[in-house]
Image 1 (cartoon, one colour):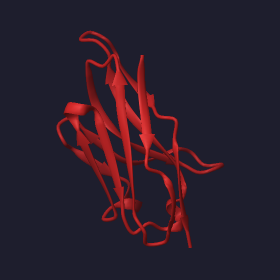
Image 2: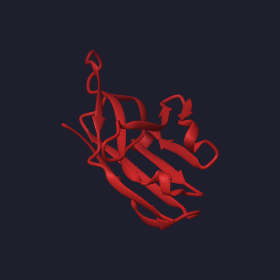
Image 3: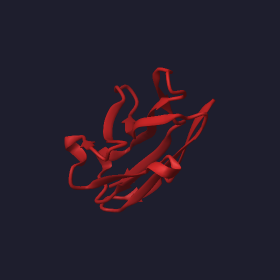
Amino acid sequence: QVQLVESGGGLVQTGGSLRLSCAASGSIFSITHMGWYRQTPGKQREKVALITSGGSINYADSVKGRFTIARDNGRNLVYLQMNNLKPEDTAVYYCNARIQRSRYGYEIDYWGQGTQVTVSS
């Protein structure tokens, strides 16, 4: 069993900041990457930021320069620092992790339950 537990969402004014955290726990052999996606009603889930175990990072163009992703490999944690938030950042944010549960097992994508981020204008 693997769980991803998120925290840190909430309501903030335009220009404000929030920090999201996600902890992966359970039967984990290795984690290839961890990251964040977001979704608004009627739209597809979109990637916000991903970070690999080696530290390679990929951001959506819409958040470059404003959001920073970081990872604690030893504790299976990933963070998303969101600065200069805009109303268009309003969404449910989901933690994602690609996990291998055993040495010879497949890599599977796991998801958190989602945390609401609302940016008021």
